[in-house]
Length: 282
Length: 172
Image 1 (tube, rainbow over the protein chains, first blue to last red):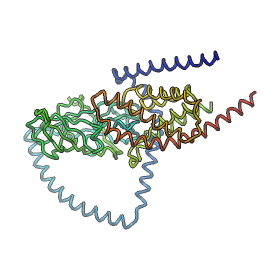
Image 2 (cartoon, rainbow over the protein chains, first blue to last red):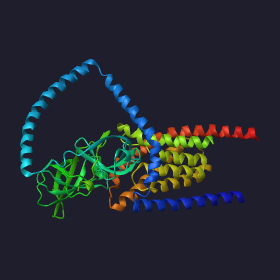
Image 3 (cartoon, rainbow over the protein chains, first blue to last red):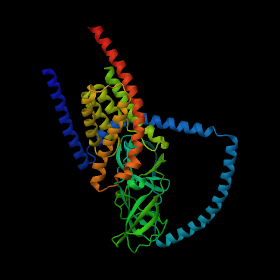
Image 4 (tube, one colour):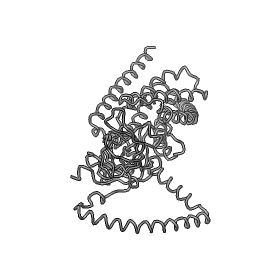
């Protein structure tokens, strides 16, 4: 009986000690976000080889699927692609003339092509967040590839997120659609400022909320929304998405609505990391 | 010794499954919370001491795998493992109703914990939408998976216990 009592006390002490340690860790990681990242680094890098293996298996399965399509399917696909190619060629001609004009106008304005030629690095997503409440993902490139905290992450030509943790061989990226993420943005034609804010309630519909638009702003339906120059972390001029259903707020001072992001957050597998942070730009 | 090694292997494989393999299957709508299944299974099968240890490890892995606060999930998983460990001697662990009930209850508690501290405190009140969009799918898939994992671990545990008894007899 006495021995059993002893045992109960021992595990109770362990519980109390661990509770205090956990609470301390929560406070520490809240106050100094990067103080505990070396521990995280060692733990997560243990899993990196297994995760990379999983990804390579997936890729080989994908390749198998592709190589098994029949000849007819391939022929019809070639035809479709050829007709698409023609249409695109025609478009390219139009674009080239537009581009020529644009370059001339840019020269007149003495704007160098400051934003269009950032160096980027391709990365593969090797893991998603551990719970369904948040929209973080882990990529297979880390500090040794030159990735730093606050670098912007792109998918296609749209903004996908921000690097929030960097370790050896991996980094954790927080998507812009996560509930507590905010991006200061402008409309591409009228330069009206607004805030793009992630919202879990809207995520299922594929929207993000678009807030704090000035009452007199002229943001039209499906207007392109890009990152603002005033943002402290996001590089300027990156496409975020298209404005949708903008209405006056009840306070009469601002407008708000939705934004349809250009990034397909559910199905992205490879992303581009911009190797310049906003801080280094200036 | 075999027990420790197999625990580490189980937790390792489960973590890779939860963070890398299941998220690939986009048709599933949601990823199951395997770490939670492991925590309550070990607590029920082995008591509060091992429940506590497995809970701490699984919870901290959840923390390390996300970019959030460290210790946030760890605290919750630790208490789940410890408190459910008290039940281990009063439950007949051989019925399939045990993992079903435990998975549903633990998942509800887990979601409520996350909602309370990470959403409600920031003034996000849409519990109904969160329930429909996030919780329900995860609860269902976790419960289904819990049946399999619980059964497998129960079998493995019986084998291990038999082995341990045999080797103890040999030495005696």
